[in-house]
Image 1 (cartoon, rainbow, N blue to C red):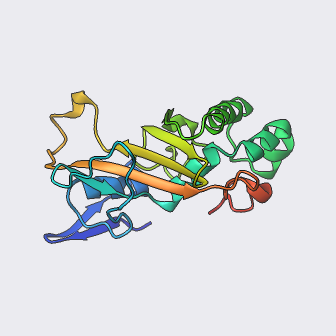
Image 2: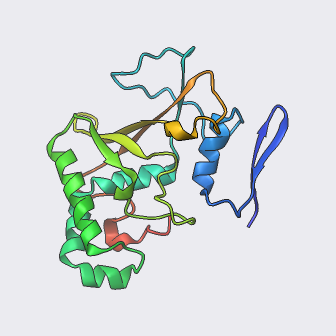
Length: 204
């Protein structure tokens, strides 16, 4: 496997594949530390609480792998089918999490869909699919906001790229707060790309 390199004015930024972070997590770290990351461009997506103050905030987009997992989070149609036919679904896709976790994800998604246009906090452990490093596959998302927007048929989500207070002595300071903003289309009658059609697109 190759290392992940990010170009910036001073040269290459490289982290080893022996690092426990996933490629998506590395991309956000590189962005945080001021490197140019082509797959993570700044975004014009804003939500009602965003001030748009670019002197204090930098708004960055999301990755397709994150969009697919967030979309699957609210896919009650196919999560319900998987739960009802768990044994067959698990045989079809051994990578599925436990039935208990499927039910937890379903209940979270159901609540979000039944309370549209409201923000709800979700933890990264509600991801249905892990990535190549065994992490959530949600990139930099940890405790993040999600809403079902029934006016636009989109799932909107947001987070701030920050760190626990006890790591403050190890994390380089940043002039502008890095805000993550994402939105992904969703047709409740079809469900998510990851889970519909017997999970044929699971491998992405």
